[in-house]
Amino acid sequence: MADEASHNNPGDSAGVKGVDGDSPGAVGWERVTLEKLATASLDEQKRRRRWAIFFRFAFLLYLIWVTVALLGKFDSVGFDEDGKHVAVVELRGIIRSGGEASAENINKTLRSAFKNENVVGVILRVNSPGGSPVQSSIMHNEILRLRSKYPGKPLLAVIEDIGASGAYFVASAAERVYVNPSSIVGSIGVLINGFGFSEALKKIGVERRLLTSGENKGFLDPFSPLNSEHEEYANSLLKALHQQFIAAVRKGRGDRLQLETPGLFSGLLWTGAESIGIGLADTEGSVSSVAREELETEQIRIYSPQENLLDRLEKRLSWGALANSLWRELYDQAAAPWLR
Image (cartoon, rainbow, N blue to C red):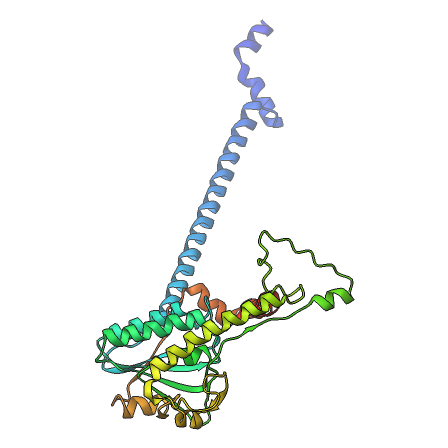
């Protein structure tokens, strides 16, 4: 009977165990409930984090958009193109491929200026010691092409601090060249510069091991002694490039050149005042005076090539960009001859 009573009233036993907190059913139910609450709380936290990340990302995109808009407003080609104006294109710094004063950048900007119907004339503002003869030649030829295509829009060059070597190569394609009396003008010549380290390597006990598949592949290697045949060939190369430079200047300046001037094509430099006397420049003038007196407007707009956002920010904020530029300059001087 006792067994039967116990069998018929299992709840009594369960109730007693429940009081002691040892009931498997009660413990399992509470655990499941707590796990569900914890899971729900974690899910809610994850949702909040996802939304927080989303809003932060959206805000970052908004900041980038605003930055791009502002940089584009002040740095894009043809900023504030409304109304008749003079387009000023700046040739500044060393002329080289991939640099600020590359043919790609300058020619792109020149084309944008000429295509704009509100542009009454283009001024090429020059502040450059020169650089690559190839880049200079490409710019020179493009200026001649644009002048022919848009005969109603004069292109005038204004040399400010310096317009030498490749920079003068480019300026000579302009319809007229204006200078300041103190400008530095000329240097109609070509050079290859570099260093020779062969004697220094000997003194510090370093052996140069140069293997080539062609007898002239090590042409002007800075760590090997100068080869007389290579030197002779380099001089012939320079003469050929020099003649191209001279021909371009003669074509651009025409009978304005005083060809009897000693050293005209020897690479010498002249002041702006002297350059007028020998025909390398036409007269004195600045960007503002040329716009006002020759193009009959005081409305001037600076045209500059568009760059992507990362390039602009790097130029403005990064010391790494400066270090990279200096390292590239040292490498060009030491590891490879520089033709300009």
